[in-house]
Length: 159
View 1 (cartoon, rainbow, N blue to C red):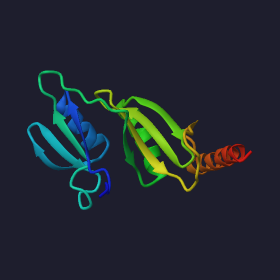
View 2 (view 1 turned 90 degrees about the horizontal axis):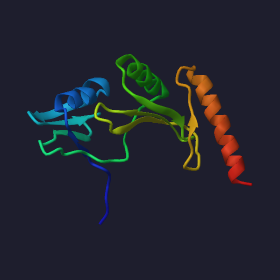
View 3 (view 1 turned 30 degrees about the vertical axis):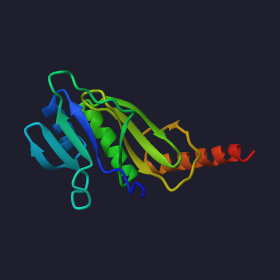
View 4 (view 1 turned 60 degrees about the vertical axis):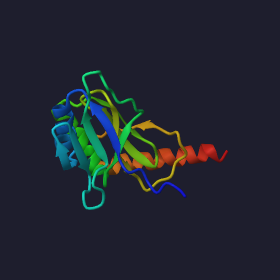
């Protein structure tokens, strides 16, 4: 007996239409099923019916408490694209960092939930590890800086 994988996460929304639109239009998730008070969403409906459920909170103030909600992206180009999109749409960006093994773009959804979009790099790094990344720089420059930082970190760890 054992867990195979995380299936999905469900969150309550105070403003259901706004949260539904944020995750479908801004983040780009596909709505796979919907009721007047819940949207089932997936980044890849052929693989997984839903990874996120956004449900309208009841009038008693239901809220979701979580550390963060993270989404994996296919490329650094995607992360840079989301960064530009967030700036254009006024999404509150918390930080952009290299974890050595990933580049993370941290932001808040419309109801203040802490979220991350990340891309896995080809490098390895001991965690926790976070170095600021300037997503306005060219990709090759970002990758060279990450690789150099990881080499320094690995050198310190082996001393």
